[in-house]
Image 1 (cartoon, rainbow, N blue to C red):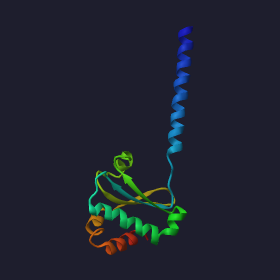
Image 2 (image 1 turned 180 degrees about the horizontal axis):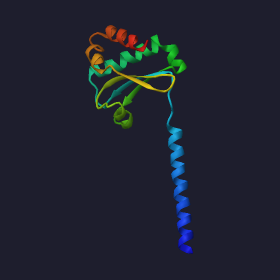
Image 3 (image 1 turned 135 degrees about the vertical axis):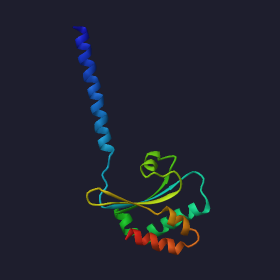
Image 4 (image 1 turned 90 degrees about the horizontal axis):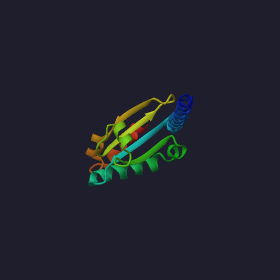
Length: 138
């Protein structure tokens, strides 16, 4: 009888722990809708071009897109790859990268990788870089 009671108590305890974790995971999963995320991924060591990508992206977003930024329709994030490994893995990023993620009204993602363009223009042609980024955000 003691074994049966112990087994029941153990089963209830495990079920309670499992349910708590499942609910916690669901609460942490935020569905994003009608928002564009501008994600600048970087490592600890950054070259002049990497810093130019961040600087020019941030300048454009904060000036030309101040209103959508304020409303939360546009989000700019500078992401340290070593600090947010799961996000870097999700976007298959292992070094400095510029990624746009456009979430539609249903929460579906459209990902645009601007890394190659960013490295080719952010430092040497900042106006061209900002114009193209602006076009992508419009």
